[in-house]
Length: 214
Image (cartoon, rainbow, N blue to C red; front, side):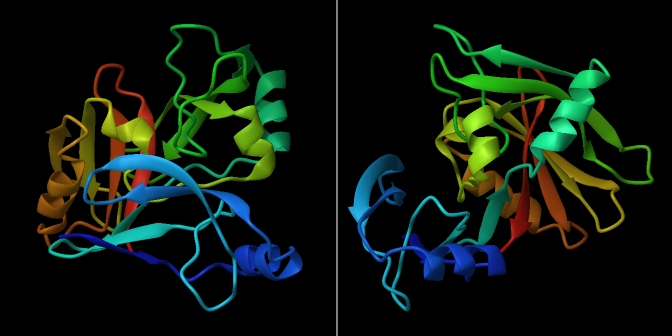
């Protein structure tokens, strides 16, 4: 059985929590046992379990090692700079488009804007240095949202998982159909040299997110 706990907020999150009104806010929550993504309202009293769309990570615990998925943190000014170089383009999601946002780790909704940009997601001094195209939802970028563990955009897709050591060298790899992602992450953590994981979308090979121990 899995349980969920809130990872302690960062300084940015505490400023957001303490500076806002303690009122009902819309929050994205997980039903861990049923793997169902739901939305409900929760309070934000300090000192209690809380979920909200401040950048708060949720770690899953139980028979597995705690971990968290981390999206990209890209400043809008950096995106505009890439655009001037021809390395970023603004698009609008249409019907049938498959645009997973690498910031919020959710899919970009129909009629919402996103940036397609070239990004170095594995900036290491080894042969495994890598970069490629990623989508960043414009609304998620401006609001600086993050997502917790096992986001819905990962659960419904075929994935490849790459494990790296602290120096950026590949230690292991695996494939996942999404629903078994937790088990594959647990198995890759059993390799003692593994320091972090990168998840890619298997069909396109594009980078999805980074996974770290919580």
